Structures are given as C-alpha cells and as structure tokens.
Length: 314
Image 1 (tube, rainbow, N blue to C red):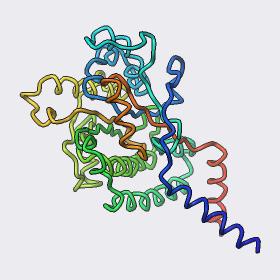
Image 2 (image 1 turned 90 degrees about the vertical axis):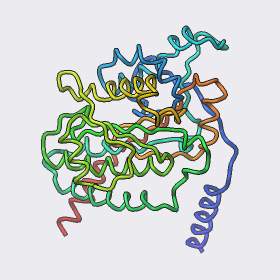
Image 3 (image 1 turned 90 degrees about the horizontal axis):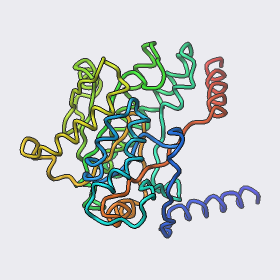
Image 4 (image 1 turned 180 degrees about the vertical axis):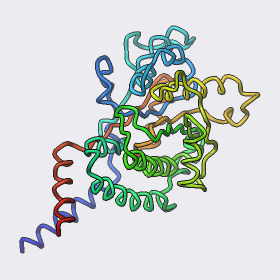
C-alpha cells in the first residue's frame, strides 16, 4: 500500500511538471556587488550589445565582461533617443521560476575535483558522453518555436584551460572538450546560428579533431592581448560588435537581431522562450535576460567522491 501511494504521488508530480503553467514573471537582480550569483551567459538585443561596448572595453575577466554588459544601462540610456521610464533602474532580468531559464555549470564539478583523482574525472567524462547523446537528439530541438530564435546568433567561448582555475594536468584540459560539445548542442537545440571564438589555431584544431562535423557558422580565431585567456570573452564581444557595425563586410550578421552569449561549459535550458524574448522587446531592446546558474554543491561533490571510490573498490 505504501509503495502504491508513493507511485501515485510521483505520477502526480510528473503530471504537474508537464502541465502548462502560467508564466511567473521576472525580477531585477542586484548586480552591484558580486558576479558569483550570475552565470556567464545572457540573451540581449543586438542594439543593446553594441551600445555596451565602452563598458565592455574596460573588462579584464569573464565575470567582469558579463557584469560590464549588465551594468552598462546608464550609458545606454544616455545615448538612446528613446525615453526610458526610470533613470536608475537596472535593465537586467531573471525569471522568478528557476527552471524557466537556467544553465548547468559543468565546471563547478570538475573545479572541485582534486587533480590527482583521475577516476572521478573519467567517470564524469563518461557521464557527459551520455548527456551529449541526448542533447544531439533532434526530437528535443526547439528552433522553430519562435521566429526570434532564428534571428539570434549564439556566441560560445571555448578554451581548453579554465578561466578561473589554473589546471595544468592533461585530464583537466581534456574534459573541457566534452564540456564544450554539451554546451554547443544544448545551445543548438534553440539557436541554429552559432559562432565559436577560440584564442589560437591550436585550439581550433583541437575542437575539429574532437568533433569534426560541428554544425557551426564559424570557428573564429580571436587574438588576445598578452596571450591572456581572461581577455578572450571581452575581445570576442568587441569583435562581434565591430562586425555588426560593418555590415557590408559581414552580410550574414545583418539578419540577426539578438545575441545569446555563453561560456563553453554551460548547458542551457529555456522553458519560456516567447516570454524571454518578450521581456526584451517590450522594453524596446533595453533589457538583458540572464539565466540562473546551477552549480554542484560541495556536499554533492563529496557524495560523488565516496560513491565512485566505493564502486572502484568493489
């Protein structure tokens, strides 16, 4: 009887998850202090990105690059001819429902894994292969749900070395390849137009060897000052902005009205696509829609270590 009640409860939960519920809306997060609460990803209009260039030029890291865009609303207001309702109002938005727009931050697991524990990295690598297979399944594609998805160019930053942690061991570098592929196909479910930015010919070759038939518009090699990888996101965005402003030399970019930007280690999930774009359009291109970020907790990491160590001892 207890098992029957449990199964009935689970069935009701699954049914509730599948029901179309009313959109719970958005809120404006506090972006004045830390970047840790935000994913290095966002959805924005092309015009909003272009007007943010002066702030982006001052950024010196991935987190700073994203925050530069989120905090550039004052510059946007000052240069925009369109009246705005409140001069000191942030234009960053996040959904009230976590699952309406969020990313799975893959590096939050590997960054907590000791460099010496190759077994855990290997297990994580194998799990990623299963995830990638699911993400590639065309039955999950949603590219035609809203025409604005096809008017969006997605930018993915790839580096075989983490921006935040200096992992020199080969297995820590290798896992960033399946990180990227999982990120790519999660993004491709929604946006068929993707440009990948890398820092060198070697990095581009690394991607092409690992996944030679990537359905990508372009893998673009971007030069970076002093060969410092932390500048890659900034330089990639500035290059994209420059290309947007020189449409005769870049006719394909003229068809895009929106930009989705992400690091190469974040699986994206968009449940309320129409509402996300409406939040941008209703504010006449001012708003930046930012996904929630799902990080793996330290508690889960220790559980994972214990589980895997026991499985290898058996």
